[in-house]
Figure 1: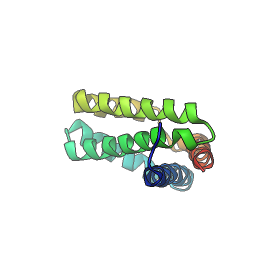
Figure 2 (figure 1 turned 90 degrees about the vertical axis):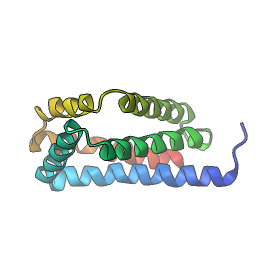
Figure 3 (figure 1 turned 120 degrees about the horizontal axis):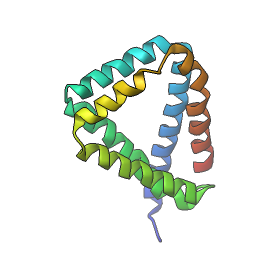
Figure 4 (figure 1 turned 135 degrees about the vertical axis):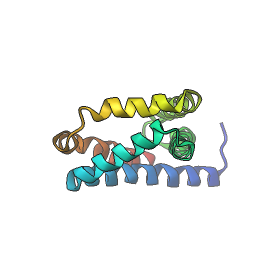
Length: 139
């Protein structure tokens, strides 16, 4: 399937920014886990209160990142992984958008039960590895 080169460039930029964002989140998790927990609690509370602006922003950015993975997949080092991950992100984001917003907030509250500063520090390599891998594979 032919894709205009500028479309590939835009997709590469979005995928790269998304991967670097994951790396940055990883550093935030290890350097300031208390702040991460406060942010997570604030987002969860906003979703429980049906904050549509937050919901649309979060899911819109996820859809953009997922679509960029799909577009970039033919030129990536792992085309099938990019395409599958991209579609999973897009479909799950659309599903989250059509379900009641309170469910998304309730899921966040459920997850926050086991999130501690220690858990964040233990898990922090995961987004760093995934983010760096995405950037590497996209180039």
